[in-house]
Length: 256
Image 1: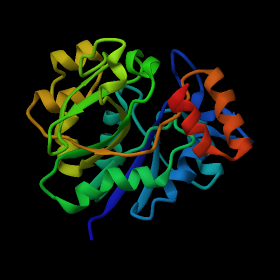
Image 2: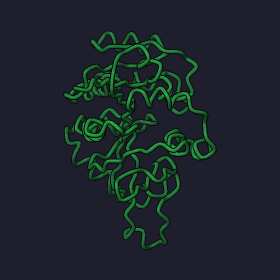
Image 3: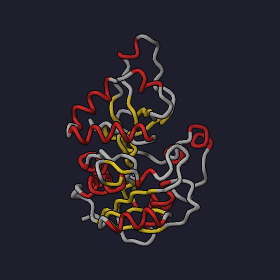
Image 4: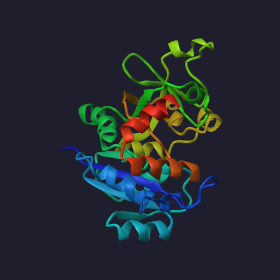
């Protein structure tokens, strides 16, 4: 059996929302919601929060989670994950986004399965259908196009493929869901690859893998991420949790 480690990178400093991992949602810090949801994925052998901030580290320890303190100098969450994984034995590594308190463990499993089934794959992630015009044109919603075998051709903040309004509803468009699964050896290689021009232009580090010639398997999921980027997002997520109807909330999100 392949050993699977999942890491949740969490930093305190954020330009849009400082202290975001510790923001309270229904009486629990956001990082605890993410941790407990990820823990429900039975394929994960070990789950670790990677942070460079003692405040986050202490909170994770208080709710019983495992934490690893990392360097404050990392440019990305992937680099932080790579530092952690360097200290542990594993075959597969999952990078879990720390700002999705409504994360479904089933989505983690969906991203993980190709890596368990094909040991030649370096990396896998998820995509979900775009159902809303605003989502299609929002640069904060990353789009992805894939080939016929489900491998990524390109990721962009622009709408891809091109469509001509008002016929956008006829176009099949997908948004990228930011759960990354890596073969451990590839992750260590990836974190040492030089940044590429497209990566810097789009501000998307997964393009570094494509530009260096590595394949990324992209699995379609029905999971629709509702991330927290602002205090306003926090209020929306708390309302969803209090109502206890996340599935309905996803439908609303999809057609908003």
